[in-house]
Length: 203
Picture 1: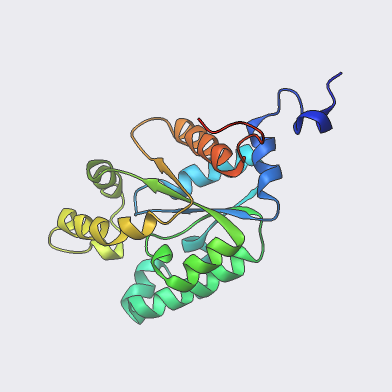
Picture 2 (picture 1 turned 30 degrees about the vertical axis):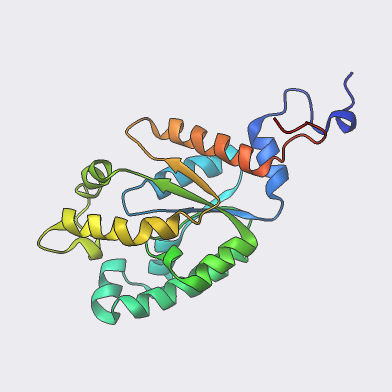
């Protein structure tokens, strides 16, 4: 029988088990634009890892007893972002979990710092055509209630992509099955969380 202590891992060590061990008490936080698939991928990722799943937008709506659309309309974006920051801070204290965040959450310095301290961030990056096809299925995106939603999305990509690029891991969210994207996320996390074997000479 192979001694796991001698090798550092069990034989046939599942990727999910490796990631759970490497995460410890940290959460996985999904960031990216609306339509990137954070909630759908997040739920499936949480199931694979045996972690609870939370959607920050749903938690905000439950706390306020209002929809995101109504919160924007009544209080404005800045007030919404302040509340979002508080909710995400609370959720991060409840980890480990898989947490899907709203598109603007990672833009706030305080939220990024908290995520860096207590989680691993994953940017689900999608191309414009993919995003637009997905968001057209839902007409409740406050930031896209404009005369030209596609131009608005382009502007959001220009502003937000450089910040999303600070995430620990980037995975392309494309038109394949959700389970394929989940597997891509797991493989990217495995690489990021697992240090290279010691004693291997640099090539």
